[in-house]
Length: 142
Ligand SMILES: [Zn+2]
Image (cartoon, rainbow, N blue to C red):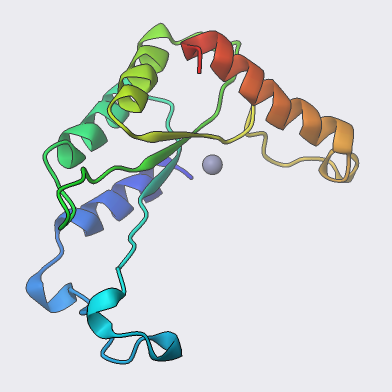
């Protein structure tokens, strides 16, 4: 996702008005009682190439709580790209994980315009996905 799209999504999150709030269904599936059906909202951010962007999201979520008192958190899908070696970025990722955010694998290089050969190559995708796992373990150790 480009930074422009991420900004649009985040701007939308901030400018929610009372009219935008979707109330819980009064007819949950399978006949479940309304007061027994939790709502789930998942926040996910992909690419995440800038430490200050991650810190900004953290500042938005850090004081937010769910109705049960648990913290509101998000998932950050990281591109590991070992050639970039951004220590500040990975230090921020480590901090976010220690605060309860989830860190996800978004491949090693996030390569666009793949050839048909790479798109259908298990070896290519194994390198991207397992390589990202390996890189993230090296960067912040979990
Ligand atoms: Zn992406």
